[in-house]
Image (cartoon, rainbow, N blue to C red; front, side, top):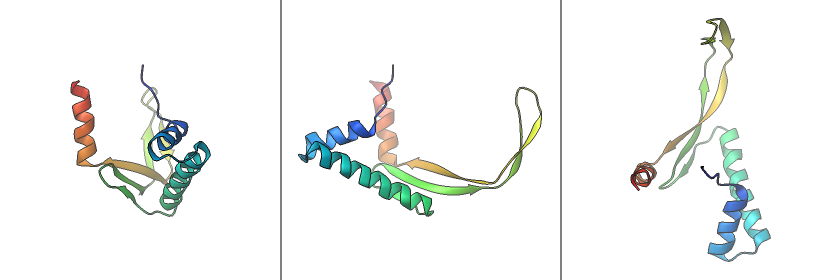
Length: 99
């Protein structure tokens, strides 16, 4: 069974590690996430050293196919967010799989 890390978990970690109040910790986490999402909405890249890079790219319209029926369907142009982990993060995750 896998666990999901939530905003509340992040706030609790900031509370324990940094020593801010629970309310201040929650506000700090919220502020960081808002700043990141605002930058991505504007099309900016968000790079976090030793973690990875979030970016937005445009995908052009194309014709897709329903794998079950084979019916063709148009897929409109859209913007998608991508995440590219740093080499350090890739190595860390790979090492975690060994234990």
